[in-house]
Image 1 (cartoon, one colour):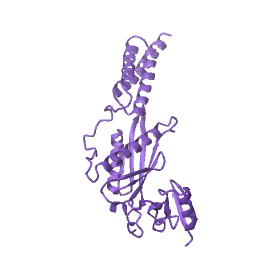
Image 2 (image 1 turned 90 degrees about the vertical axis):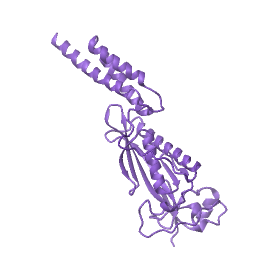
Image 3 (image 1 turned 120 degrees about the vertical axis):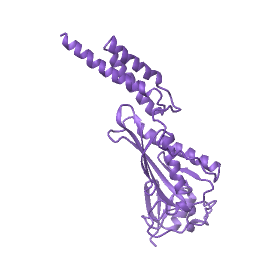
Image 4 (image 1 turned 30 degrees about the vertical axis):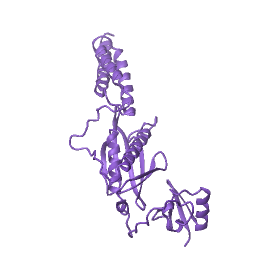
Length: 294
């Protein structure tokens, strides 16, 4: 045997002989939550569950014997569905990557619920591929922002979850898409912990039906409804009285929409959009009037 490979996050190192792995585990350079395999392609186990390291003093509280691997099984459901249903465990590897122990179907549903609870609209939903994609409104951007979640088998009932926030038509200059991805993973952690606290009792599903909650429903974040209302008033006033007020309406409306996207509280969304539209009409009308009198 050539040795063992170690993986942490997206990094894979090795090969190392067993003595070096044990030495690294004793010194703390190797973590019990790291992945270990006999080849770079896997299959991967957690260090704490690896049979050759079970007798090591740092491998405390070993997990039950590893679930037998099926040859050529690349589906994320392969071994994870065989995990015990009584409680789950969440381990964060980074701001965007985590490991969760428990049935795959349940972990997938909890991630789906996390996206829905943060006001996301599910666009891609493939449990067999371990792939989820949701979209959120973002100001006047027609495409909004997106968060994807990829779920893969990490061995012995563990699922590796990685979330990514992005804009399909722009660069995430202000980090709002990344912030949304972190919010989704945080909500996922909360749901996993809630399920762990009730053991094997089933959680009520929040899978949206045909009448899913409107994206304009209010969330729990900071409210921008007053600014949205001011935008609409300036838009109306600019159209009737003073042209420059239309510029103010557009600025206030855009700021309000961006704030709603960041906070998750969409109260006043309609007023902000109305203010922007009226502001645009105001500038156009008053521009034509000024041009006609020149």
